[in-house]
Image 1 (cartoon, helix red, strand yellow):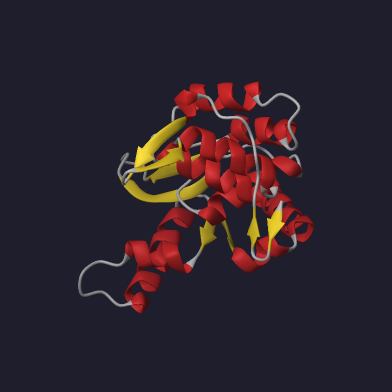
Image 2 (spheres, rainbow, N blue to C red):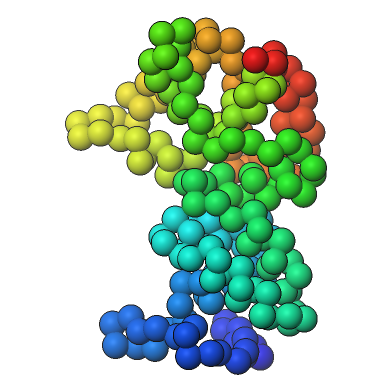
Length: 204
């Protein structure tokens, strides 16, 4: 049901799917994520599911809820999204990237991968990694750079540090592929560019 700028969805709730926040009854984190996974586009549904898992949602309960939704509108899609959920995805851009990797049958990456030097010292962490292909993937967003800001730092300092970190990872033999949110607006083109980058690496 739609009312001006409000869209209302109705569905049965079990008592265990309701909690209280600031004295108001609301759906639990798991039920909310399951419902949004049904009605949002798949890439944005995965954003919600990943965020819910980061915030402590029970993955088993979440999977049970989408399973119980049976043949409700969007339920099959929600099950596919929940199966991909991962609390290691740290941003909406990373989650959306992961969905498009899945949609275009690209290799599954390792998330939040630490690169080490020949002495075993950590020199940088990548959003995505395909170790067998020698490729690292980095989603660049302003939120990410803002998160990296330290007291007294300017954005230019963070960008400089990022370039230095990338260069150090490249010296260890990794191919680094970067993308931003605008690139995800045309997923088919973005996926081809990533596929080409994956062919450019050197197996490790």
